[in-house]
Amino acid sequence: MFRRAFWFTAGAAAGVWATTKVNRQLKKLTPESLAAQAADKAVEAGHRLKDFALDVKAGMTQREDELNDALGLHQDPDRPDNVTALPGPRRLRAIQNDKTTHTIRPAGSYNRNEDH
Image 1 (cartoon, rainbow, N blue to C red):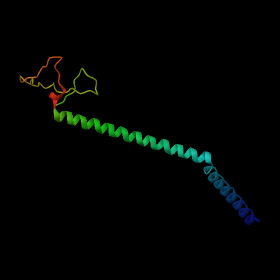
Image 2: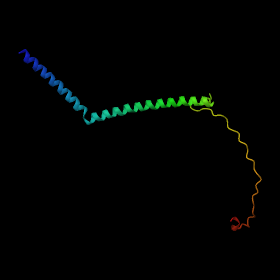
Image 3: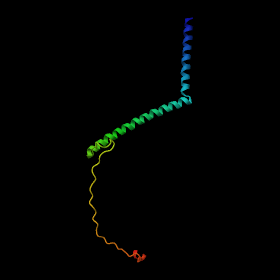
Image 4: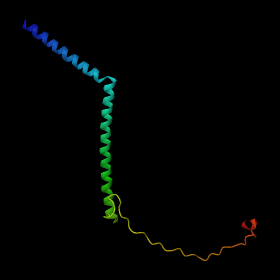
């Protein structure tokens, strides 16, 4: 008698457990649940992409600082953090104007054939 009661209880428990598992899996496969899972994955991917972009930005800033030090471009304390001071402008020599002669014609004596 106890054997039958034990196996009956064990079978009932196994049936409840299996039914619960099957119902959970069915709920996971509903369109709403699949959409929620996809949205969660998209949010997670967005967070990973944001972290990657922040790492890239930090690396760029570090490399910019290294290059500025190597080139002698130093930060000006009067400027914001994102603007670096550039070296002063170069002085260019003025171009000497050669005394080129231009033909000035009187206003009424223009001949189209002279250009050819």
